[in-house]
Length: 97
Image 1: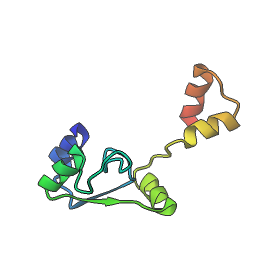
Image 2: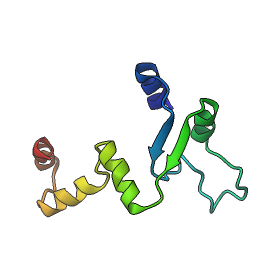
Image 3: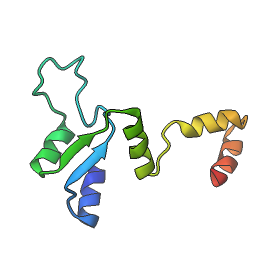
Protein backbone atom coordinates (compact mmCIF):
# COMPACT_ATOMS: atom_id res chain seq x y z
CA UNK A 1 0.00 0.00 0.00
CA UNK A 2 2.84 2.39 0.87
CA UNK A 3 4.56 1.62 -2.44
CA UNK A 4 1.37 2.38 -4.39
CA UNK A 5 0.84 5.57 -2.40
CA UNK A 6 4.37 6.70 -3.21
CA UNK A 7 4.00 5.74 -6.88
CA UNK A 8 0.70 7.60 -7.23
CA UNK A 9 2.11 10.72 -5.55
CA UNK A 10 5.15 10.67 -7.86
CA UNK A 11 3.68 9.55 -11.20
CA UNK A 12 -0.10 9.81 -10.85
CA UNK A 13 -2.76 7.11 -10.84
CA UNK A 14 -2.17 4.31 -13.36
CA UNK A 15 -5.07 2.90 -15.37
CA UNK A 16 -4.03 -0.68 -14.59
CA UNK A 17 -1.49 -2.85 -12.79
CA UNK A 18 -0.10 -5.97 -14.45
CA UNK A 19 1.14 -8.47 -11.87
CA UNK A 20 1.50 -12.09 -10.91
CA UNK A 21 -1.15 -13.86 -8.84
CA UNK A 22 0.46 -13.28 -5.46
CA UNK A 23 -1.85 -13.41 -2.44
CA UNK A 24 -1.52 -9.63 -2.05
CA UNK A 25 -3.50 -9.26 -5.28
CA UNK A 26 -5.99 -12.13 -5.03
CA UNK A 27 -7.10 -14.24 -2.06
CA UNK A 28 -6.12 -17.86 -1.69
CA UNK A 29 -9.24 -19.53 -3.06
CA UNK A 30 -8.47 -22.75 -1.22
CA UNK A 31 -9.12 -20.79 1.97
CA UNK A 32 -11.75 -18.35 0.71
CA UNK A 33 -15.15 -20.02 0.35
CA UNK A 34 -16.85 -17.12 -1.42
CA UNK A 35 -15.92 -15.86 -4.91
CA UNK A 36 -16.69 -12.31 -3.78
CA UNK A 37 -13.81 -12.30 -1.28
CA UNK A 38 -11.18 -9.71 -2.19
CA UNK A 39 -7.90 -8.60 -0.66
CA UNK A 40 -7.47 -5.18 0.93
CA UNK A 41 -5.15 -4.25 -1.94
CA UNK A 42 -7.76 -5.29 -4.51
CA UNK A 43 -10.44 -3.22 -2.75
CA UNK A 44 -8.13 -0.19 -2.57
CA UNK A 45 -7.27 -0.42 -6.28
CA UNK A 46 -10.96 -0.87 -7.11
CA UNK A 47 -11.80 2.26 -5.08
CA UNK A 48 -9.16 4.18 -7.03
CA UNK A 49 -10.50 2.73 -10.33
CA UNK A 50 -7.19 0.97 -11.05
CA UNK A 51 -7.69 -2.28 -12.93
CA UNK A 52 -5.70 -5.31 -11.74
CA UNK A 53 -4.52 -7.53 -14.60
CA UNK A 54 -3.21 -10.85 -13.28
CA UNK A 55 -0.71 -12.91 -15.25
CA UNK A 56 -1.95 -16.47 -15.68
CA UNK A 57 0.75 -18.14 -17.80
CA UNK A 58 4.47 -18.67 -17.14
CA UNK A 59 5.26 -16.53 -20.19
CA UNK A 60 3.19 -13.65 -18.84
CA UNK A 61 4.79 -13.98 -15.42
CA UNK A 62 8.20 -13.69 -17.08
CA UNK A 63 6.98 -10.59 -18.87
CA UNK A 64 6.02 -9.07 -15.50
CA UNK A 65 9.49 -9.86 -14.14
CA UNK A 66 11.23 -8.31 -17.15
CA UNK A 67 8.96 -5.26 -17.12
CA UNK A 68 9.77 -4.64 -13.47
CA UNK A 69 13.44 -5.59 -13.85
CA UNK A 70 13.17 -8.33 -11.24
CA UNK A 71 14.46 -11.86 -11.47
CA UNK A 72 12.71 -13.31 -8.41
CA UNK A 73 14.56 -16.52 -7.46
CA UNK A 74 17.13 -16.30 -10.29
CA UNK A 75 19.72 -14.70 -7.97
CA UNK A 76 19.79 -17.72 -5.66
CA UNK A 77 20.22 -20.09 -8.61
CA UNK A 78 23.04 -18.01 -10.06
CA UNK A 79 24.80 -17.92 -6.69
CA UNK A 80 24.60 -21.73 -6.45
CA UNK A 81 26.02 -22.08 -9.96
CA UNK A 82 28.91 -19.83 -8.96
CA UNK A 83 29.57 -21.74 -5.71
CA UNK A 84 28.84 -18.70 -3.57
CA UNK A 85 28.18 -19.66 0.03
CA UNK A 86 29.02 -16.68 2.24
CA UNK A 87 28.03 -13.04 2.55
CA UNK A 88 31.36 -11.63 1.36
CA UNK A 89 31.26 -13.66 -1.87
CA UNK A 90 27.59 -12.76 -2.34
CA UNK A 91 28.27 -9.03 -2.00
CA UNK A 92 31.08 -9.24 -4.57
CA UNK A 93 28.83 -11.20 -6.92
CA UNK A 94 26.00 -8.65 -6.64
CA UNK A 95 28.19 -5.96 -8.16
CA UNK A 96 28.34 -7.90 -11.45
CA UNK A 97 24.93 -9.60 -11.38
